[in-house]
Amino acid sequence: MEKIQNALSQWAKKSSFGKRYEEMKQEVLNHPGVRQFLHSHSSKITKEMVDRNLNTLYEYSSQSVHCTDCLTLDGCKNVMKGYHPRLELVGDHIEVLYDHCPKMNLELERVNRAKLVQSFSVPKEILSARFEDIDLTENDRLIAIRKAKNFTKSYVENKTEKGLYLYGKFGVGKTYLLGAIANELAKNGVSSYIVHVPELIRELKNAIGESTLEAKLNSVKTAKILMLDDMGAETLTNWVRDEIFGTILQYRMLEKLPTLFTSNFDLVQLEHHFTFNQKGDQEDVKAGRLIDRIRALSDPVPVGGLNRRG
Ligand code: ADP
Ligand code: MG
Image 1: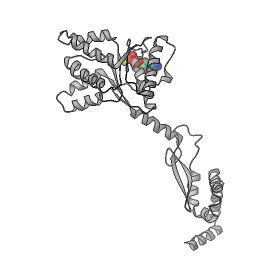
Image 2 (image 1 turned 180 degrees about the vertical axis):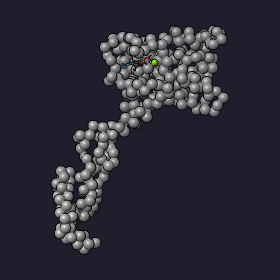
Image 3 (image 1 turned 180 degrees about the horizontal axis):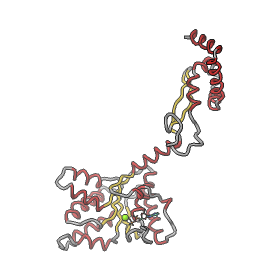
Image 4 (image 1 turned 30 degrees about the vertical axis):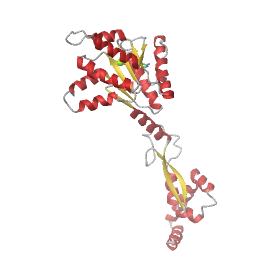
């Protein structure tokens, strides 16, 4: 093997190929990353090792490391998108190892965070809501924003169980606040499930008599943090009130699972909504029991301000 290599380099020196080879070698050896690597391992790396590993050093030098010009992950120039090279001495070998670049790390964080925010029929813009982006010029909403932030903080610090019941007029940003809470929790590795109640009820009604009903109900019931968006906007029946809401809220109370709500109704109006079923029968006791559960699970917080929908 040695002999062949010697012979090759002798031959290479004499030909024009040899000239190009020498130029390339000098280029590779002058690459700042390669120089630094060779310098920091100078006691262990011989000239012969450099020659033998020239391919590896070339591979390293041809890939971008600091990516200072790189604006997006999509624009990555490297062969393996999102990875940048690092040289490593393994025994008497030089190897190129590939690590995630900072842009790739950011993307992975974003994807992981998105996985922590589960949702059912919630608009995209809500799923990207952030406290940082909230417009703080409207004083009417400041208390609600502060309470929402406090919830995430105290949940992360001491697993506070009591959620929020955010109520106010259409379009003031109640659902947006749920999204901001969910994303803030996700930053701390906490998962939550935002569910648009009218759609959930529609879906569950369609699943009556199917084996999927139980599983669907269970995934909502047992969510680590559940956010029920737009309570009272669903089409109410006795079954919805007692078997769906009743079951979910009872379970969450017993298991001490944090639950947040939004509604256009305050709790008095919501109780009224739950009191009358579709036949017009008045069922105060059942409605009262449900409201008691909501009160046990959450603190009512009014959300004021202007309608933000154009
Ligand atoms: P609600 O649930 O109270 O009816 P939404 O949360 O759906 O209202 O908000 C209404 C609209 O205003 C949505 O398009 C939402 O993205 C936008 N919005 C709400 N709050 C904010 C905010 N703080 N900053 C920017 N946009 C917001
Ligand atoms: Mg809403």
